[in-house]
Length: 227
Ligand code: SAH
Ligand code: DHB
Ligand code: MG
Image (tube, rainbow, N blue to C red):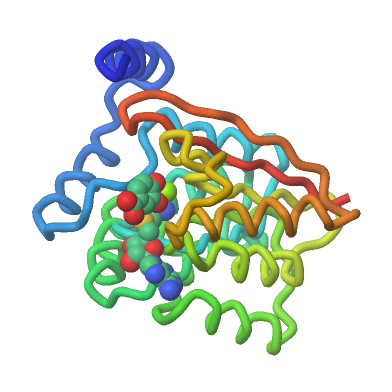
């Protein structure tokens, strides 16, 4: 099936997006720097920007920057929605790797979105704890996409950094279907399953999940709203 998925992804991308020279240059720079090819796909990036636009999100938090592909998708939506830096528009993105952060910074400048982005380098949990301790203004939209074993730790902190009507999106919650393996000892699967248990037990969370196929294979997103 993977060939059909990729072919349909290609068709849908050509119809929904077409060529985006900036994002293509961003991916090229990521390849040149030897970063892993694990950014969201173009259509998935457009899903993120669509959700940011629909929610009129001004303050976005991302855990896991890589080369900044998804960050740029969300930053453009914030800016196109009138959320320039002067209007409180902000995308805070958290990355562990100095190398990834360096590539991302260059890509933000390439895309002209650097004015709305704060890139914090360090372990995501520590950066989130600092945001919580400093009384950061709540975020309207959070995208969790870093190391999968830590997804529950990120979700727990994301809850403290959000408010009513905020949206929390979590990437890679299906993992070729392995998420249903209740006896898996894979730390990523354990992390995703623990995240689902936490969200299920949280009365303030209304959540759905979408299985996705396409150029990135078979995976999925969880999409949660804080009630
Ligand atoms: N959101 C990006 C892809 C992120 S890939 C996009 O779609 O374009 C996952 C990223 O999480 C990698 O860059 C990796 O270095 C980072 N990461 C891994 N462990 C981390 C940690 N403990 N804290 C913060 N980031 C981490
Ligand atoms: C991996 C990480 C991701 O965030 C993703 O979307 C796909 C793959 C990985 O670590 O393999
Ligand atoms: Mg991902």
